[in-house]
Length: 317
Length: 262
Image (tube, rainbow over all chains, first blue to last red; front, top):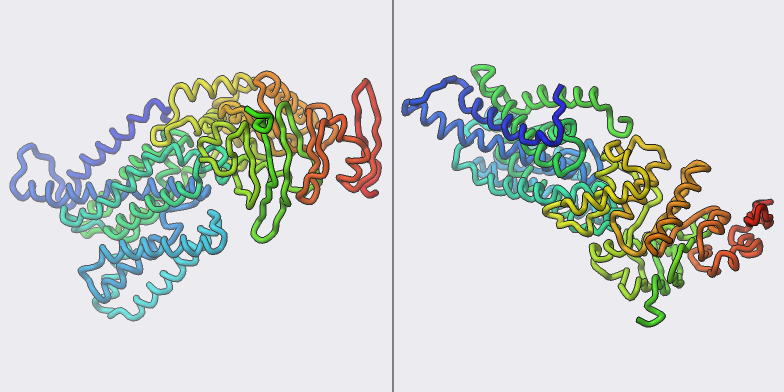
């Protein structure tokens, strides 16, 4: 069906570019024109273009965080949120909505980083292995989820609570050029993980990678920082975006194999394309925008099922 | 170069897991050929090999290879000199055999760029040397235990270096594959003049394939020397707390276990 050999890596930029172009055209107002009017120009360049850029960067950053964490933690089920970054960001955003609504993005970003920092420190206290990191990630996520629940309970149910719930459902609506300051951390994450794609191969060997000359502890830290920067930035910009980070690497591996030299660049394009597709559906399917996480759940989760059907679960494949 | 700088020299090596010390100051040297660690389960064989391979850090002691410090050196530099074949390779992702062997080239690779044609060539060479080039495109996870072990040895060959460390290269292998893997290791030692240190559970295999034996018990070296001198009924009975006897058939010596206690 979708078998592409390694040589055909060039296909993915083309698929992505086509989606990028289509995304410019679709939406509440669908138009194709060579001579846009003033209104159309604003819609294209000031509304749709920044949004598409943001969606692309977020999709690539989440996908790459996913593939980085899956290799570092040697766990095909790892997603960008495994160390608690998304739970931290969710709490940060909700807290900001409650006390300082103009601070939502920076607070979400800061608390996402804080959550991972705490999880990392806790993990070091209990052994510093990848397993202890994953466990401390679960603990930190649980604590921030509890705090988020507390905030929801305290929030004014007519005004603040709907805003929190809406934020948590995720959306790129209203993202303009001025909000694209979060592009910085996302680009750092994307470029960094791309450069370390060979290291990911060796890191997936676990502690044994030391005997191959890889400073496992150093690169684990670097990759966690890179994945967390990208994920925290994407989440703080658009709320909780589930599944993209987990599913994109699996799609990429199905297409080009497990070697990260190929799988990493492919994952970036798959993540960007998948999130663009979901965002297009979210803003064009119904007159009112659908929440993004609803669309990603409905699109990406079945995709994972199809992959598992085709390839089997790891270890049994 | 003085005599002391010849080959692998280990001095007073200690290692702990948490507060439990499992190696209590091990010293030995190996200047050529195949050396074999023998000892009961839990004697510290794997720990010792992991220390020398750089997988874990010893708590005290020195180890050097032709004067090169194996304990405090930079990982990449050491990996060019020492290759390690782990006891178990738990692949989480079904990499192709070629990719697994290519990872052995890591110490020669610029990590931000990845392997180049030279590394791929070295990978093919290693696969061909072990006669497994036809497996190159197969997923590593779908191989048999014997094939996997050969792939890991190929990875160590691709890695290069003068010292090869193998942790129980015969574990989980059938009767024939144990023989096959050890024959390959022996050939590599002779053909490339590599120094090889491995651990085994069967003293008979040590007698056939190795030159020197190091007997490890309770984290201490209790005896070492050429296999003919060291691997006697007396020392082995003491090493394993058992009773055995020696028989000779077709000029080959065998040690046969009789009872599991002295």
